[in-house]
Length: 218
Ligand code: ZN
Image (cartoon, rainbow, N blue to C red):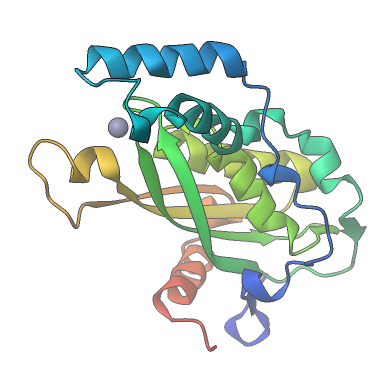
């Protein structure tokens, strides 16, 4: 059971331990020479000159960039949270909102980015607060579709913590919609996944939604 008075809202940016190694910034297992040659090929076939000065290092840069942007495939999910699960007697809603994420849509390989909001109601286990943004990042740094990313975050927390409920809401702006076709520059998509108490209980869900409607205090 939860009530508004004892619910905790957390700004994730305050809780990321700067001394922790950033698991996700190292390049993933990209086959550098193959990607470089594919990018050079692409440049040539969109009518560019891969040999001109400005493009000389582009294939190399793009290949390294893909290592970074798809590093989520290489993250060991269990290692990510292993040392950060705590057994506690705490069963109020934990809300971590406004988590910035950057992903690539799997249909066009163009960026989509925005905010993810995560809540869960513990059932004897909690995860360290800095881990929630990292879980989001692990699933964002892949080729994705927003609906799937939303479900993966919720399911991962559900399987890892077996909480009373999990809620994930993702708001994303998609470059493939903004740059192409109708060019509606303010196109945003909201997706959500509700499990357990958040799915069953209207009041719990409403409490979470009220958190999202209110802005961070500082
Ligand atoms: Zn797309």
